[in-house]
Image (cartoon, rainbow, N blue to C red; front, side, top):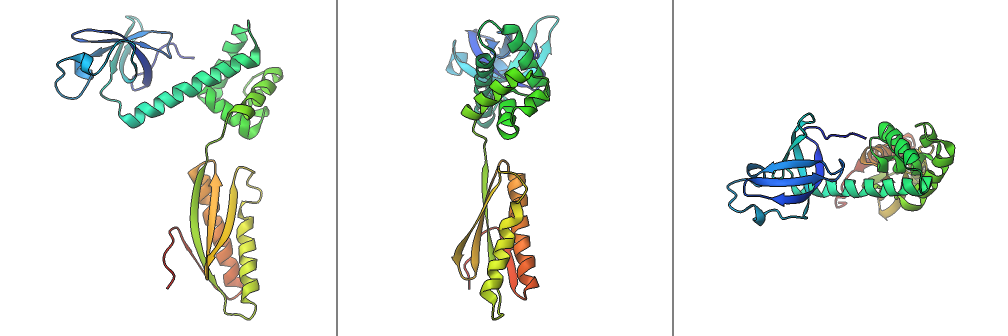
Length: 263
């Protein structure tokens, strides 16, 4: 775990002192080290009263402008953090606190050194503690053992992860139009849909694909996956398989990302 933040980092702080020329804030993620927010970094434009913007005890997110470990100085900006960044950082910080607490449960009381070594190993391997728990849900305890965690603790962490962490997912939809004038056209379309449904076979249990009838000649393909890239890949693969199959059977197929009225 880093002792000092880097320039450009977003950090969670608690305002400890408000003065006429600036604000002193404690960095919650760095052992309570203090940083300075100059009045010019409180808000855009002229600031008459800093207390109109910040007050003691307030939890805020700041951007690190400069760090001087030798002097113990950290310069911060409050105005350079937008609302989207603030919400994202607060959520990330809360997730890290939960993950650290879960590691404490896994190692038990009085094992602070073990807890610290596990935290360091997970941060080195995954970049954040919460990400390590997400990976444990997806891949199991083996991914933790590969990161240098003893099996005894890897098993416990994986169990805690499975109970507490829900992997985020994205949902996307596309529309497939298919027709086949052949006498066995209905069977041809069924065969094409079966080919489309197999697009995610072997891709893992975390990708779900469903196909529903909308109305002749349209079918809806819905994909749920851990991230947009995987979802998009599965959607396009499914549609292309159906189109290739229906064309092979002398039919016609067309894929659309958005639903349009059928003429």
